[in-house]
Length: 253
Image (cartoon, rainbow, N blue to C red; front, side, top):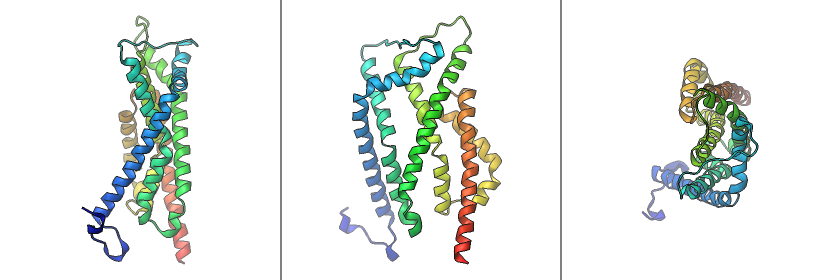
């Protein structure tokens, strides 16, 4: 369907087709940003690999620790995998901005001005989540290694270890975006802070289950390290919503 054939909505509102067209455009731009980031990730792969190895080296107390490669193509597939994950990480500001641009038409004019703040806060939260995962990794690895007993010799495959480590960092990084999602839902009128406050117990259980699903290990150390901050973010989102309601009532009065 040509753009001129798309029916216009009344009162300046977008039709369903226009929303879908807009969503496709935002997704394509985000995908292109990830692809560009992956190219960068390919070239900085040696530095990224050294960074990823640090938790493992710290766990086994060996500064020159190495990973095992079992298949001829494993080195290539590992580098491609790392490049893809780096692309996702580097594209965080882009897909956050695209998400903001997609929902901003439904916001009040004074709320639309906070796009840069939203993106900056999202990037900071993502970086904090990745940093927490990196700090947690040696402790989680130590737990996972020791739980098998002293008779097992530990030597990780490169692809398996790198995939595990990066997925853990992404899980923490995305988990730290949780407050932004809750704030957005309140701004859009989907939920209220009062409704969130009434569901505290259910939210706590849901957070624990979600963390157990998204973290690749499911070990108790990673579970507590991510579930704890996510619940604090839940409470912070409730506080934000109530403060926003008070300000709107004060402005209306």
